[in-house]
Length: 331
Image 1: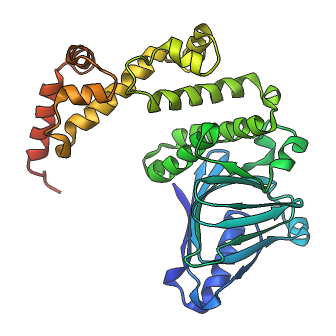
Image 2: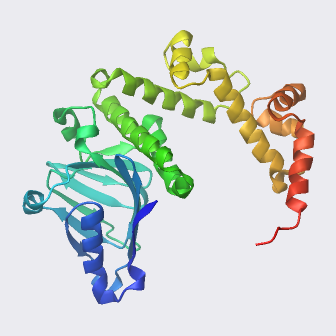
């Protein structure tokens, strides 16, 4: 459920800066804002509650934002924010640390400490997705987290990539999520943030065992998703890639109510179903689709497909095409 929406393009130019300042104060935190080009102000923001966390996606023309000691004394929500830059360039200084981030990079900052942030300085400005959550939810001491504030964190590899993909994915699907799903995914996002910070500070030992195990489950799940094409994707190979025993890998999945084999099979079949139902891939041989997703022999795909769907891949493709040709029902 979207809780905050503002698009300044619907406002008079003279009212836009004040509206943006007030909306971000309520949705995020109070800051002293200054648009660098007052005659060309354009910004929009949407926020979604994720249980203990909040997801925000926003875009803005070049601006400077200051979180001053006075504003902190007046009101402090005591939140951490993790920002993923989607477009443009952003800079921040907090605690005598300065970073400039580009698209694909992550940035952590703290509402309880003064900071100065600049988006731009060139048009069209910047666009970002932001995860905000109470500081008390992060299972790491302040002395570990503070040095990471205003430090650019790579978002294209490892846990950083996993967290970035999750945040952008949530932007796309939040309207389809039930309230329970939003709570669970918000908790997951906070756990991944903790794992990311623990990794870069070499403090994994400080994470609770449950957080470490869940973060490992998410990393392995992402690894499986990106290696489905490999017919040698086995529990042993996955465990070796993550420097754990196969027995421990199975235990991690059992704790999540699944098995490694089921995860591989379900994801492979989901990709095959998507491609078989895609009209643009109608001319692609079924055997080629199977090889693309880790089934080197057509019989392997047929056997797995029939067991899961009760029909062969060719029958599924034909049924999908028939459904697309049905006339639309009454509205």
